[in-house]
Length: 483
Image (cartoon, rainbow, N blue to C red):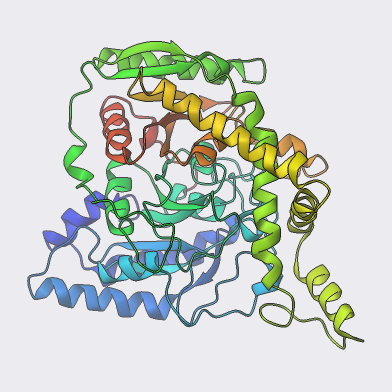
């Protein structure tokens, strides 16, 4: 049962081959048995999962249908879940139980999805390796000595190890797509505003976006269908009709114009990954796509711009966690200043403190124009590059990451080296575009992903291309040894 995809689970439940409760019990036992190797879960919600599974079975018995009705999933631990710990991977929120459900959680629950638990993540979603979590590093099921990517590494590792078929995740600078690439999954970052951020604890509000992580594009389409839609509670949510993502999966790629930016193939890219990307291009050409070289001239400025804007927003968003209004409070403070200093110093980890300090500096009176304002201007140039490119092509293709997953601890002493791994993913967040990573092969036994980018609200096109590619390749079917 644990090898079934979301689509196969939906068919099995509809055909009464098994019940949601049976499937949920199998997966909960599997998580209990195997997750100690991976550390992919922070909280397991067994009682809630069985209640939801029984309710889903009762709904099906009355004739109700739905692709997510009775399907087991997990939520990244920054989506608020009523009465359940929502920690953001931080000591700061270790004892926080949300008083309400995030919109994404509520929508998926209404669709009948079964929540198995909350997955591990980089603290407050800050990281590319899932090593900054207060609850310890997550391991990559393809090689337990390597990182699974971050910040949604817990969701990625759990799905890759077949502990569950799909999970929610978030992407601020690549935190869905990079873990997908590192663990041989399909991961989709929707257009900014497509999925509600209400109840999703913020890292950088103008960049964060929730999305699905699963093994196939077909499964991502199913999960995104349940997540997407306008939300009046979220001022950044866009009132745009949600299409039937599954209906567009089987469209022909004949004549599809795919742009390959020349800037993607610089000296920083592992040549073995470059070869796999070129192989993916050839596969799509066989399906009728037309390939064209394009240019994104301001891509080189994206990383410095991102690492000014994101920390600046983080320093503002995380100011509420002060030991008074929210979060961990130190013991026996001498005065209010001591309370603030020690609560934040003890509650936040090193990476979060680093980004708060960088952000506060960039927003300070003497440096706002020199750093933050200039970064926002670069952001506009990056968006303009994409708009120009999409006048010529329908999709942009390239590597998801410049290298395969690195060893645990390998970049801990050099944060900038880890930041550079986001070079291909952060531009989509700066521009607010949808992006998808799908499996494209292996280097030294570790998975590699190919990234697709599309114009605003063209998630269906991304899923269509990925699905057609997956019908003609088998990379996404490979399972890590031991799982």
